Length: 240
Image (tube, rainbow, N blue to C red; front, top):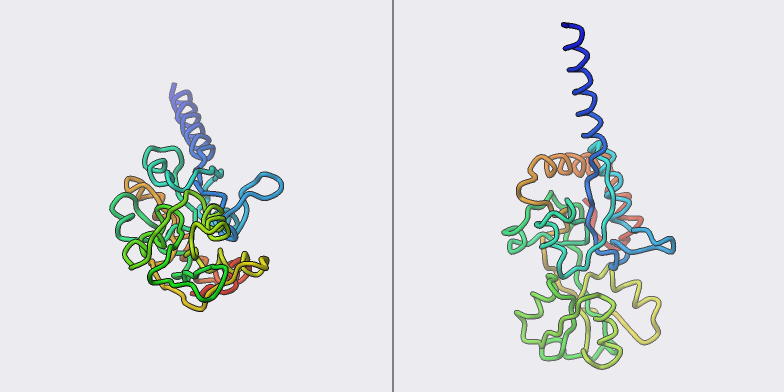
């Protein structure tokens, strides 16, 4: 009987370990904001945050899968349990922190830049496009300019090209490659420094998961591997 009890206990422990190992942390991202995150030619999530997220999961000894979600509902769907983290170029702000929790930042604040058709745009009184629910949209709303919001970053660029907006305000790391590849668009010299850096969004009830990712992020800062990834994907961004 004693051997049976021991064997049963061992089986339960083994099953528990198997279940724990098989539980996959679902990493939520937008998949539409290169170089942070985008969908590659194979239909897979790619970019800075894919490479970073995979390494963080490895260091935290977690099995992770990737889920894409539209930006404007990305926080509500985290809270409702559709995935377990947000890894989507999301700046840490006091307003967002009232709804979800954040890990420590894995990038320093990235300058926000303006993209326009010419360099004589009236940024103070003009019409400025920004993606909905971003720090840039909040910044424009509080300025003297007229804000027009769009669901996707691609639509903000189209708004400038078709005359709906005088300029778009977004992360410089997103806009700089577009300007470099476009003959009709240019980055303006004026930049804005807003937000508190980018971190992983996590439900406030998932403190243990947050602690694991905080530890993994810190280990990448300590050994220089985070800066190496930033240099690879975000060459103009500040380093830790």
